[in-house]
Image (cartoon, rainbow, N blue to C red; front, side, top):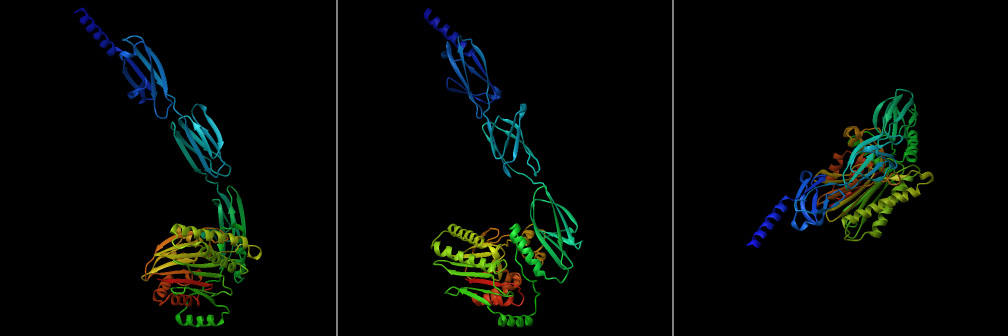
Length: 534
């Protein structure tokens, strides 16, 4: 009996002890995970967690561990020596550092990072810094650029990335002319009359001043925070416009290297049908070397390049039948002393060489695009290497169509064009690399204004001058007509008329000859057209 009473007493004693013994765990920050001797006991909601003492902990040291993502874990050891033990254990966790990555355009810009408690770090972009969590101010100050300042919050164990485009300070452009009060166009947009003082963003510009139907032009690179003066003398009306154009060609081709002017005589007015027939007969009878042609054996593809309104033909073309595909191209050369003729020939010869040597049936569309890019890059390199002496600054447009299995892959540089005509309508067309096209894209001029814009002959991309290629994929089907042309056609013959002639043509050759005959009486340029009729 005594033994039973003793056991009951001891049970009550230890039961009360277990309920009374508490370890109060306090954490900063809250919601940290709490472990006792490796066993998970929960999270410290609102920064607190109460743990009831277990009997087996008495007279033993126990380890309390607190963890939280983004913070260094922390351990504390306590010794429990009584069943009525109470302890308050506080944990102040240390946050792990975060990372700040800063890059800028231009790079190597001085950076100052300012934080709390006087923290300061100085370096240059790009930089990668380990920082304690908190708020920081990032300052970038680079000569000739607007100062940049921003604030970021660095979180524990996380990376914050900043990519900053610094804004260059404007330059100042002073434009004067003789005579004064001339209209000033900068990259094709009217800016006022001379004398003119403008604040302009850094970049490359073509300046054109006009008065009394005569004009002069130059190009210039504006650097940040610099002042530039331009004084242009406008020739009296009646002086040879060709001389001015040649001067501009030298300036643009040898100076800036971004805009390239394709020079030609003023475009003729449209003539009536009888006048057109008479002019056509004169051209066909008086031209010394009028044209060259190419076609595929099945005659579904035909191309012709005609000297048109020039003394020399600087256009070129390619019609190449591959085992399971067809490759078409038109190139329009740029430059004086027959350099355009050389550049356009290098372009089509390189294209032919690359595809004859490296194309194989069954290549994927991706591989075909890569081969086109390789051919364009190689042509660009070869033209630049050949542009010495009188050929300095030469270049060429190049538009190419690779046709296979109901698909056309188009590559284009410059302002030669590719059209896809279906059911009497132009379904697809390439976009020009030209100054006027840029103005159209920005909404600064209309389609009608583009047709008569004074700087419509300035292109922004050309092989050998400034590299750039646009790629297109067009789905094609039976009955479609694919046309490639130099601007000797599409700058002088309206698209509506091009579609009308193409749609009525009985064969690819019939279409090409019809289009060239339409352009001959009015064009002042070489004319090249390649057609594939499906």
